[in-house]
Structures are given as C-alpha cells and as structure tokens.
Image (cartoon, rainbow, N blue to C red):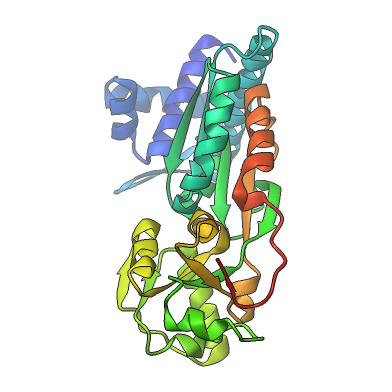
Length: 315
C-alpha cells in the first residue's frame, strides 16, 4: 500500500474499532470530516462499501471485515519483523499486552517478574477484564495473549494450553461443611450448600453460568447471601465463615497455607471447566510473545497438572 492508502486504511480501522467517525477523529487528533474523506476515498479505490452507517455509529460490512483482517495481519507481521530484528540484539526492546481474567492475578505475578528479569527492555502491559472482553482483545489484536477461564468457543481463537480447573466449594477449615467432608467418600451435592451463607460472583461471570447449569441438573436453586464482581471479596467471605464457589487455581495459595479448604462438588458442570492460554488463530507470535507464552505455560499454577487426591477437602 502507498503512504496515502496506509493513512486511509488506518482511519477506517479506527472508525470500525471505536464504532464512530467522531471517536476515530478524536483518537487520531484530526477533524471528523478528514476521517470521513479518507474512508470514502478508500471505498472508492476498492470499489466496495466498507462501513454501514447508523444513527449510533458505524459498523464494518463483510468487505470491511476482510479489510480489517488484512490490516491486522499486516500490523502483526510488521511487529514480528521488528521483534525478530530486536532478537538479534537479545530482545532489548518491544512491548507485550496480556489480557486476563481476575482469577489469574496472583498466579501471574511470579512469571511476569521472572520474564522482566530476563528481558528488562520489554514493556509488559496487563489488561484485566471479563472472559468475553479477553477474547475480543485477542481476536482484534489488542492483546498478544489471553488468559481465560471456561471461555465460549470461538473459531478465531487458538488455544496453546488448556488445563482442567474444577469449580469447588471454598470454606475456612472450621466450617461445618469442612468437618463433615473429612470422613465423606463422595463429593458434596449442590443441595448440601442450602442453609449456609453463600457468596457468588455476578451473573456476567463464567462461574455463574456453570452454577446455573448445575442447578438445572440437580433441580436446586441457590440463594446467595452476597453477590459481587470481585473474586477477592468472595475469598474474604469464605475466610470469615461463609461459603463460595471458585475454581481451584484461584484459591491455591490460601489452600496451600491452610487458610481455606476446597470441597469437591458432585455435579458434572463443576468438573469440566478449563483454563486456557490463547492467541488469535493465524497470528504469528513475535519472539517476545512466544517466550512469554512458554514461561506462562511452565510457571503458572493454573496450568499445573491437576492434583490427584481424595474426594472432599484439600488444605
């Protein structure tokens, strides 16, 4: 593409990404008329409409989606080239963006610290967001890699690592459910949680979708005492004597030191969830992103092989 075409396609990309010509103009620090003109000229050159214009903004046509895909591929290839040249000098510069769900925060600090020690010239940025937003950022090349729990299937996603991470009931060691589980041979049923103070994530969390499936299967409807959008608060609720439902890896540190214990749950939806390390399908990872991927695969608790132990609680 010529320099002029490069400018035009960038204006189109920002309008499609931000959902409006005015937002793209603000981002690019130009007049909205300049953005509209560049997009119109690009459409004229290609002989196809690239944007559908609505009252609330713009959205790419099918042809527009293909142009966007081309542009993202081009940017990704340019990044790979630049970082491969940098690798000849020992990865002395560059930047990496990682999109993650909240549950990965504690397990991520160690690997990122080690990566920074090995490659101090590479800037790391972590975006904290929900599962759907993690996938969107990865698909649209806003993030190089994503860490996500129990994501919906997406044909544009490549999964590099997938490990089972069951959802369990989490309580403190003195909770009646923990004492009852010590001699139990079978996992808890969902019905066993009734009558106990229960905290659950908001319905937008993947965990709640899993709970809903299990409720339907068991014919039980749980009534949480507390609903919130912070996993840290759910853990505190359990520490103070309540019950919550979380994936194993989210409470691994508390279980290891005996502050909390996990109680296996019987219903199938709690057993099957996975955590995944993802990138966009077809994206060639830069040298730095590939090194980070390898470190996350090796060092993160979430991707460690699941422990094989007795049914019931772990401390």
